[in-house]
Structures are given as C-alpha cells and as structure tokens.
Length: 247
Image (cartoon, rainbow, N blue to C red; front, top):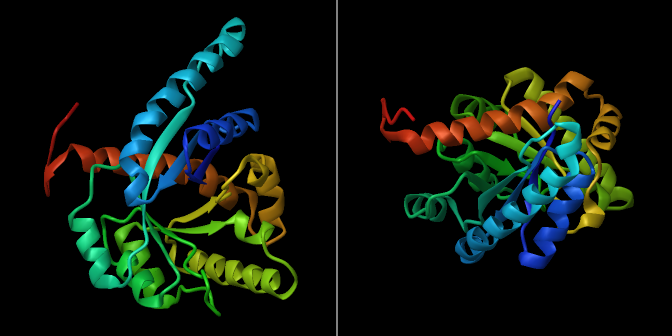
C-alpha cells in the first residue's frame, strides 16, 4: 500500500528538503508541496534538485533489497483569492501546475471552488469559521466537479481546548456529508515543518477515533491522491474538451 501526504507547506530549499526527507523516513511513497503564486516558479527549479537527491539516496538504500521505487514529489499551486471573481481571474491566468488548491474559509469562495472543475482541492473550508464551511449544496457541487475537500491534521495539532473541540466537530460534519454525497475527502498533515508530520499508521489510528473506518481513511491518503494525479495528467494532455494527446 502506497501512502501520500498530499499537503505540505512549501517554504524554501533547505526547509522543504528536510520536510521531504522526513516524509520518506516515515514511510510515505510521495508528497505534494504547495506554494503561493509568488513562490511557485522558484520552487519548481529547486524541487528538481531535491527530487534528484532524494531518489538517488533512496536508490542506494534500497538497491540491495531490489525494491527500487521513485519517491514522488509533486509541486502544487495554492490560491488565496479575495473573492469568487478574484478566484476566476487567477484560474484564467494560471501557470502550468500539477495540482491546484484553493484556500477555503469564506463561504462564497468555498462555493466558487466547489463549482470549478479546474480546482483539485478545496483546503480547510472551515478555516476561521464557526461551522464546517461545507453544506449540502457545496457537497453536491464538489461531487459533481470532482473537487476534493481537505481536512488537515495540523489544525488539530496546533489547537487547544474549545477550539480543538470545534475543529473535531467540523471534521465530523464534513465526514457525514462525504458519506452522504460521496465527494472526494482528502486527509493531509498540512505540515509546515518536520515536527508536524505523522506516520500513515498514526493518521489511520487518529481518524478512527473520529469514527472513520480504515477503508475510508486509506482511500483518503492513498487511492485519492493517485486519482488526483491521474486527473491532473489527463488535464495536461487535453487540448480542448473531448480532444487529448495520447502519450
């Protein structure tokens, strides 16, 4: 079983290298690092260097066992729009990217993201809210447009007391809507440093405590990330709707 941490917060060459090496040590088969627009182009350049170093060392460690697999390092673009119109404008002017994430929180932005087929992930729709940020209408749109809704372990780790209780409540609400409307549900660490990372088994154990079963959790940290990558590849090979390049 291959597990992915599909939301690490990219910073700079040194910090990202450390973060990726720790994810590899913890047993992940790949990670996705997200960057804001102003940092994205520079990040693409130094991630190539990190990929080469990580996979060279990984090859050396696994060569004797014959278990040689590349560790996947995916670059993602994270948008923080001011309003739905700003989101549409940013998407029209997007650079080429593997994965597109929209920072949630504002209910209008949450809805605009769920309604846009070009959005891969709506991140933390509950951010700075007094509810989960997802309702029946948004859940239906997320399913229709195949937009993944992300819940982040980091929000639990960095909260205390009543705030933590509220976040757990938001997670429960999103999980219930996911079961009813079947939109993709993504679980990630949201790690900004290697201290925020947890093993895949830690994630499974924690989210079992939130009444998710093991199959649901594995889908969220294994099958869904691979599906997002496949959809991204399909989009890259599509020239216009219904016409695509066959590799």
